[in-house]
Amino acid sequence: MGVSAVAAPVFDQRRRVTAAISITGYAHRLNPERLAPAVLTAARSLSRERARDAAGDGCRYPSPPEPPAPADPRPRPASP
Image (tube, rainbow, N blue to C red; front, top):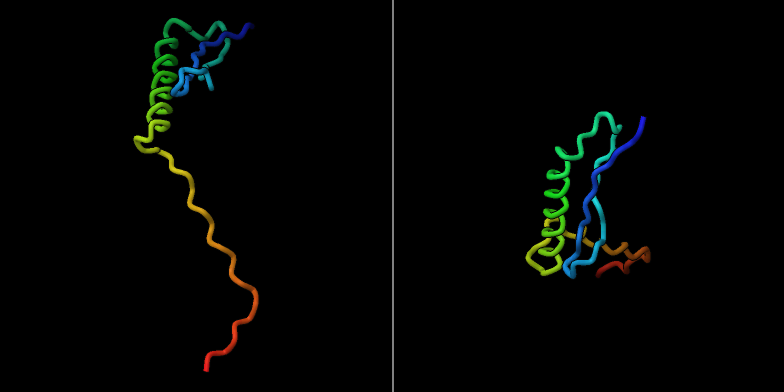
């Protein structure tokens, strides 16, 4: 039994390949002609989203907030 795959590149805003998306399966079960359009569509969509995020048009997945500063372990003087 052989293995077959369909893959497409994912580009950044400068048109550099930075990732890839693929589907892999047994050759006798995988139909590359049927799956290639879906893989290409997914890769193009990811490339467009990466370009939008880099352009500052809003990030769909923002960075997590900074954790709060640790509490000061020193005792505070009593107030009068």
